[in-house]
Image (cartoon, rainbow, N blue to C red; front, side, top):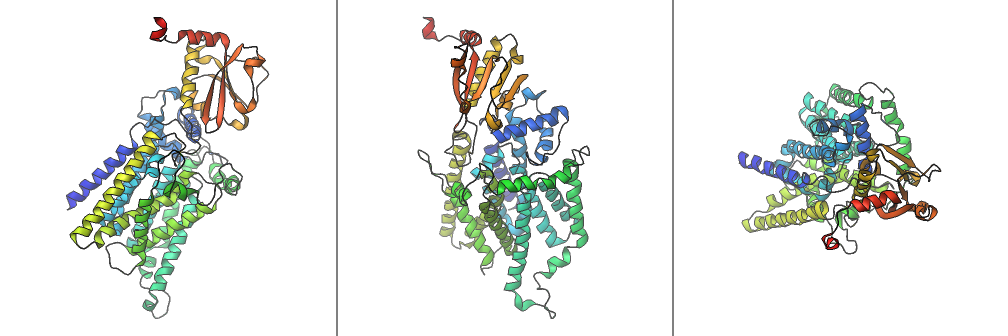
Length: 532
């Protein structure tokens, strides 16, 4: 049985890799990814990194990308690829699955298998595992804290305290929203202890201070171990925030950062959505001319898992752990739902907890089927769910990967940008200055991302909010909102040669000096029909 168990886990891990690794560069970089890429380029090439309390989140994403770049073939920033960048979240997504294997005592072997499987194939988890943003790293480190903290509470072993401390420190150094996870975890601990107390009042000792269910945990959780975990968190996070002891304002800035972030959470942001935003995208998303998107089947299994923690039926699951994860997932979902500021990847925080519960629910469903036919029916239901989720996974990551009808696509760069970049590169080949050709990008509010990534090979680029008065360069890229109309203003010396959609409803015009556009067109291969 042991060999079969590990063989299944290897198969699940390979399935997770199969969904995440292929065609990592298929989807254009999101503007957030491009910002992170430019920030990483400064660290990689110049050794420059300074935590910014106003933008960009924490340092782990940038520092943990360095090893992947070291082993890549990239020699400079122009050779750095989307594939290399996206290996970082891919790696930590797989690591989170491996950490789940430590929950065998809490979920049982079948529970671990199903929880790992659901992490491996959940379309939301997979989609953002292929995204160069901080969220997947935060989920991995939160899983470290949960598993390490729970195992320490059970065993009292110092190693688990250190393990949880590493997870806490990396959470802190990853993204400011880690405080929501910590708040949910603390609340879940209090609620679980309170629930155990309420359920077992008759087991109070003579002084009425502790229940027999609470005392073992309090005896094993020692103050010095908690202190060690917190010290470990600081030892892990301080070097990152100080840019390895070169920026001592970093830790203080990591506290100051909550002022601008609180303003955004309170509504000063374009990303304001109703409370049900996350659930709509996870459970029932059906735009026009689109297939139905729903991970509702996994949610149903999560509900079964939740029920396991609160019923009186004897089962192999650790009910206290199930209740703890239930409280954690539901509280975190409420927190994110109440905050006006919403981006879909934030849902990963509570969705990862619900996937653990879904694994427990699937295992419990099979276990409670006592005769052969009901067990076969349960297995058929699970197999159908896996097929359904896998089909949706394929659509999300390899068909609708940049399509706004995909619930996980949000303010996504459209493939038009690749066409623009190819055109500009072609013009540079007929211009005498080549990659030193001057380009000016004009857009209000710095709304030109991810262009800095796609034009990173050009040495002379200016970024403006309004059309400058200086002589016009060979290429001007202008946001349509500015209505620069250079072709009319220059008597066709500059032509508007293309209208390109950067993101949904964000369009740019490409203007090229006529003589260089003419040379570029003449350099293009002729159609066979034209040559006859």
